[in-house]
Length: 378
Image (cartoon, rainbow, N blue to C red; front, side, top):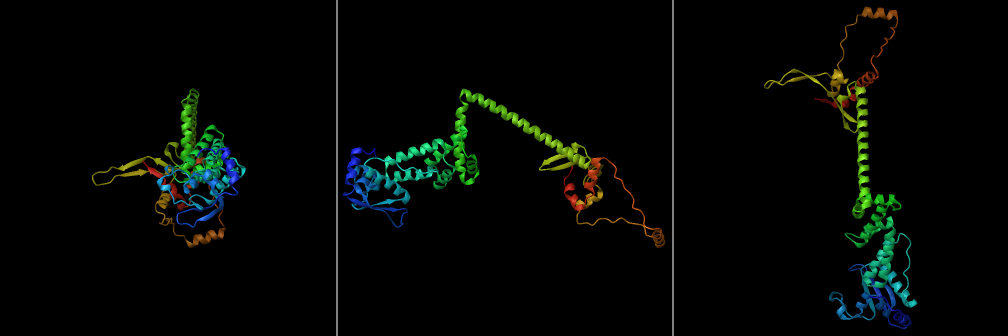
């Protein structure tokens, strides 16, 4: 519908008071009860601005009305099916204000975040075929998208509309462009949305816009130079990360080697602070036929005693008690008469590494289970 002529609007203004009135109803869903929106709306004004209402009253040539939209002619009321009632009221209020002013007035401004609200008005205009207002609202939406769509509007748009939609494309273009140009404000709010599974469509669309802009930039002479510089920095960063990882692994191996009093070559990090220790075995019997072979391992080279290995491998078994010689009653009485014996002084020998290994290996059997479980025979 083309813009309304000023002379025609002036004539509509004069006829608003005495002209024919219609009742406008709204039915949100099929089968729901119709709700009265306007009890007495100027018919000529409604027909002039809304193609939907004009078709309802057969106020346009039949050749312009699709067969599916043809309805019985009515002179007193019209039913709007679908959409939101409060949004249709906004559009009808604007039409009425245009009639009172005798000219096309500016639609009221919404406070930010406003993109989603304007989107609803756009859809109402699309339904009612109010093209003049639809173009006005579309311009505002494009102005918002050219700067930055609010994160709240992003949530609302991607929650309200399922599947591909022009509003989603506008949001993706707005945020992707702002990201590429490095001017996106409140980045944390958008980053949180990009991480959420329910907004994966937003992430995919934004990434697609960003990648297209980047690809186009890299085709320019300036972009080609920037791409080479970027690749160079990426390689340098990767080299630094690899060197740092290697240093960390070497330090870890030295620490473990000192703890177990072994060579660093015997320590094999497996990640997450875990490791395996390797030691050489001596073949004491070669396998022949069905007879198995045996290999002797020197666990003491790893700081593990036979008693600790037995406790770790069979934690349910009790410790072996050392046999002691029978005590002579006379000797015991004689020692008691001499008085208490001074405690023996024991000194640990070896360096710091041996001391740590000794402390660790003298722990309770339960503490040694994990340590011995890490042993690897090669």
